[in-house]
Length: 193
Image (cartoon, rainbow, N blue to C red; front, top):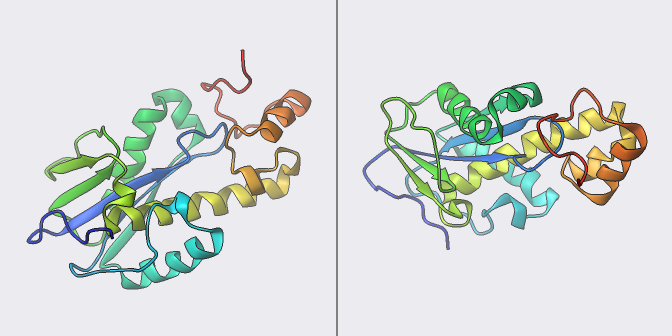
């Protein structure tokens, strides 16, 4: 069972991102502050949930959260500052938009660029350990998936409606056949060397 809190007495925001390993599109992060006693039977790391479960949870999280926000860093920015910094920037942008200021940040992963005046803790596999990080993982993934599905309407040959920009065989095959789009990350190795 996931935990509701790291510190019982602090307002905590969980943060996670989606799309770090993709060849195309933005990296998206979310920050979520849940009620102190929040519990859920199926909420966990978004990658372990079905699309239907994620979409149902997305609505519930937005409804039940004390505050939530999504931050986006474009593929052009990723190429300029690298994917690691872009992931941290996306989290910062999400935190910037929270209508309630958290007193503590729970970050999924093992690294983070400190956010001004708010202490944080990095938690490896945090989206499987804390509800707030799991909620952030669901919002980040559903937001990014929806964006990539919209892009797929104009670029169906890359199958972004199913692969969401990740380096699948069909995505790489399409890059070989059709070249790259304006949404591809030029700083990434788009085809195996």
